[in-house]
Image 1 (cartoon, rainbow, N blue to C red):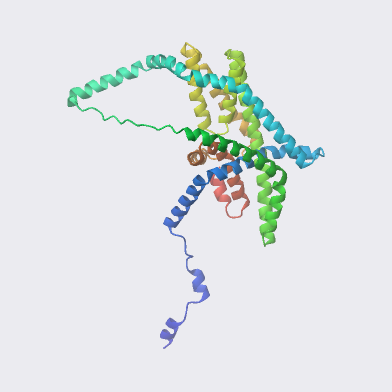
Image 2 (image 1 turned 180 degrees about the vertical axis):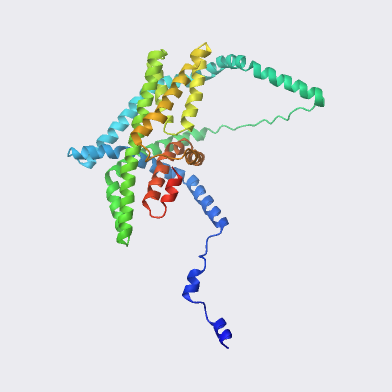
Amino acid sequence: MSLESDAALPPSSTDVSLQSRPRAPFAMVVLAILAVGYTLWAAQDLLLPVLLAMFFALVGNPILRLLRRLYIPRFIGAVLVLAAGITLTVALGQQLSAPASDWVRDAPKQLRKLTPKLQAMAKPVQAANKAAENIARAAGGESTSKPVQIVKTEVNDPYKSLIATPRAVTSVLAVVLLTFFFMVYGQHLQRNAIALLPDRQKKKVTAGIMQAIETEISRYVLTISVINMVVGLIFAGCLYFFLNVPLDEALLWGTMAAILNFAPYVGPLIGIVVMVLMGFATYSTPLQALLPPAIYLGLHTLEGQLLTPIVLGRRMALSPLVLILALMVFGWLWGIIGLLLAVPLLVCVKIVLTRIEGLDGWARLLE
């Protein structure tokens, strides 16, 4: 009777606590990740203006804090910072529009000039390929089959450009307005959001995370922006003073180098390829043609290995493998804007993981 009665008794709370907690199946986790990725891709028209506005607001927050110390209200400071940024962007765009349009217009002609130079450099490789083909034909017989050619036709839709222009203007205006409101009302929104939390401990942890993100990310983004501007100016100066490149064209390539430097590894690689094409299209000898990419690579190496680690230290260090994966994912989702936002988003994730107890190991995984 005792054995039967013991078997009929329900399990105690101690036995239940010792049992393993149910975990979500692996298939559910994969489906959740795919759903989040699809949502990020499908909602990019809504998310990208918001993320870009937050990015620009983080750049301007240290300047707003400095103006606040000078007894300038945050509203007026945001107007001044935003007006200065728009003025600088418009002036730089007007300065670079002429050389950029010239290069776009002359690109087919320059590429035609570049083709004989590349063919001359590729003659040894072509000779080796031809010898390999002759050996293969002698060994297996000459094949009479011809490769199938696929012809693709594209219908030009005149309404695409008509629709794309208002959307681009609307996106720019949305980014400007959101940047202004994030600068002025961002802190007030944070305080109201933290006040909604029920637990005092959760409020304290969340306030610490938000303050760390606002302070450290804004300092990081502003520092990286200044470093990239310095790299772009030095590269433009080297092209102008040492290689006799016209000033407007040198500023064009310097601006390109500064923008591409926001995307580590991928951006400089694209810049080197562009500089190689520019060198061979501009100069006649291979030695002169390789000088622009060599200068670009030297400046990028000094910046990445010496200047940035000294200024930022090891606190913002990220694993190259994790960084490449983040660039691939965000670049695939959002294109060029995703490449520019990948590093700030990854640094933000690292700060959150560092501040939450029990997740610091994941933060060390990103280092």
